[in-house]
Length: 494
Ligand code: PNW
Image 1: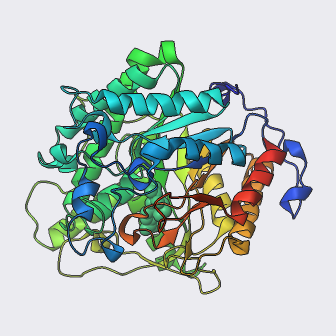
Image 2 (image 1 turned 180 degrees about the vertical axis):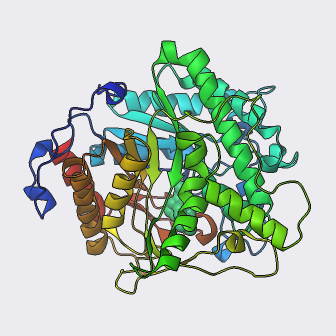
Image 3 (image 1 turned 90 degrees about the vertical axis):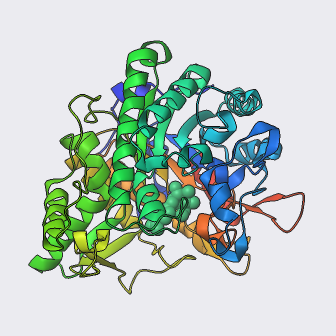
């Protein structure tokens, strides 16, 4: 069994500063460290189905999808890939790819149906025990996300992420998971993409819980996510680390950002603001200062003043009486998909909202190809730039790329040439980041193992390395050409 989860914290002797060849397969085998994690990722709600099976409680995504008009084609994750019953099929896919690691998330409401440890659903525990044990038996290390967008509905009914009490409830859930699975799971992520969760769920209302409370709720929800994350990290650190010897972080999504016009002072300033309100929002507290970026706070305060807002501060402060948020990541987990050019503007002048707080508009460069979904411009070198930025800004942390991918929409193409090329091009950029920029990249996880429920886009957007035939009750999995390509890469470099 490859049991390399600990080495990454101490061992950084990657041979670097070598020029990288123009084509990935011309690069030598030791282009990546020998213990590099080659993985694919999924999330519980997107694949599991079994939404009411064996005592699972409802989550906010169950509720959201069952409301009219929320999701493309009124689709939902009731069945999805049915990984709850077909896990062994997923395991076969993982083995066909030759992965060293698999990133999955736990459904909080499957383990704790009402969100609290008062009632544990043993069937849920058994399910994840089997998944973890099967992976280890096949020599695959699990990376486990505790929270990937699917809050137990019972906790939403008590205020969800807007309620301060959510942090201690999350901490209890996290401790339960460390206690139950931590003997075998050595890589943990607390919360996936707090930025997407907070903004899409509480500002834009396009993700569950579907709240549209612009300029207020997202900052509050994000704040409580950071408090929850910090408490869970401290719990691990105090009670589990010595014995279990794992590592805990949170997954940060970030676009690569550049000023629309390279020399333009306004565009440069807008880019800085945009970065502060996206990547900075969750990384400054955890990695840099223990508080939000100064330009974020001052922009929000100025806007509150301008619009005569007199409620409590929209961007909360961290209390000195709670576990510190600074220093609560054992590695940097990056979800990277795309890039943007930035210029000032985009706000809704007269009303409170995040857009006018940040006064920065993201635009696409017409030279970037769009793949599948409209937001996903394909910019592989944006990943290298982001990795270099992380090295320089956060003091050279160990980095896992916990998600990266390319989607397909419309006509099904199993021979997905463009997506195959994408994986080669992108992983070449990772090699350059390692070799030429000396970034301590420890792993790469493709999003996603399977075509799955792509949130508000339902099943219309396919990110899988395996196609899933949702029209057939058997939900057969078929490897895409991009899956074969990724398997070739993994085989050469693992
Ligand atoms: C991530 N955006 O979400 C999630 O972690 C996955 O669950 C999801 O399937 C994947 O990316 C692909 O979308 C994102 O609007 C959602 O920029 C939205 C954005 C980015 C990432």
